[in-house]
Image (cartoon, rainbow, N blue to C red):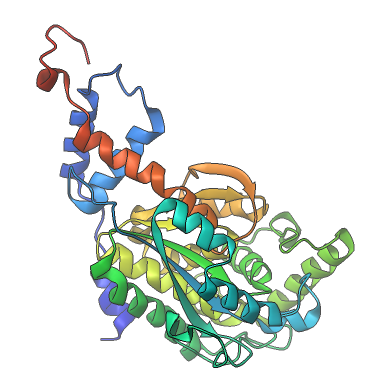
Length: 354
């Protein structure tokens, strides 16, 4: 069996018995009934995911998957694709936005090269980059499929491999991305998966103006016409209008779910990976936590598809995993409710009504 099939076969629903145990304990804590609202809901989710009333959250990793996109040749972004490579330089030097926010959240940053159009050998500290290189970026989806089906499978399985490599050293994961042009791919994916009008789920990405936004929308519509991705075949969607890093994120999520570990979703392109993962294995959504909602208009539809309510809404649009790591302290707080807050009985408070 292929790695993808083996991984999907290991994905089980959350454990209902641990969800019940967590809910019963939370109802007895020394506070008014369900006084901490969604934080308590999250605690139930964590118990069901991890099969524990003491969900581990101390060891945290954000995996940032990077790749280039051929669609940048069509002028859909504010920046040239060379910026992808330069941002990898910032990641490994510890000077990017994700590095600062990961430090605040106590998370390690792991950078994965899925396919950059440029030589990374001159980068200092290149040993900090995991290489799963599938080629110098995807093809221009206006001319045909972004990648072959074999490459799409390779991207997903590369993400599975990365999660497996990191699994022994992390309790919770977050996924982020870097790739100029990837909001275009993300819009194409959600449009292909849902049939939503492209204009309703396409935003300004890297900060393009209204004129270029119109051009971006038309480019996505044209790519969908040229490639006609099958909405019932996740790998077909990924291969025709996706990206290497988006496929790897899908695989990473699947492997996290198979290992019964929470995985926090970041912004629009990262959640496109979650859409692919969910289409491949619906139960994987039970291990996803929506870290935040970005300003990209299509992000709302993605969350509805996954039946997720994001924990944060800070008007962010950077990507890199930044919104996901900001949610990590909330996840730790939810876990600590189960293990560090006393029940009325434990506190010796008699006659209290939970």
